Image (cartoon, rainbow, N blue to C red; front, side, top):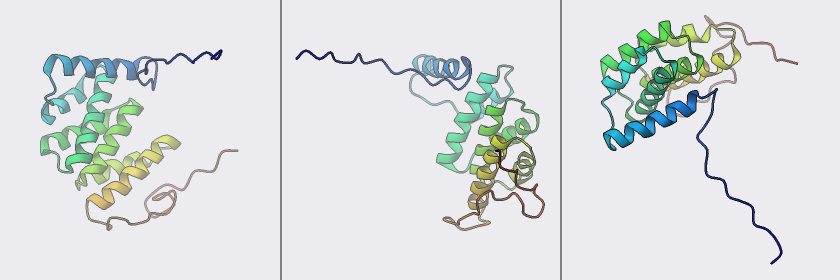
Length: 168
């Protein structure tokens, strides 16, 4: 009876970087309220990959990543937009979503892009590239679903950089 109950805080939107994720979260809510629950056509979402605002590009890439995971076959113009943006994108969060989306497509054109992503020295980007390449390998039919990839694959194999030394 004499105990106080802890105050319950309302959930907070995610914050991956200063305001970026929060702004994308608010934009998504605003779009839902303005446009209703109808989803935008993927071709329209793909156009946002060329926006000047990195947060808009990241949100578009995440939406396309989710769509690729759900649908597997994205329209050709959407895959082409992802391929183009992959070559010029500088925002690491957006690059990661693009790589994952391309991996989900299994599209043959994505292999070269994912291989290029794998050749970075950034450990986080290498991990994203590794997972995207694994997904691409399954979706493209190069390996069977359920295939167990070696840890750190493809690093240290032919045509890929060596594994990174463990940090002390």
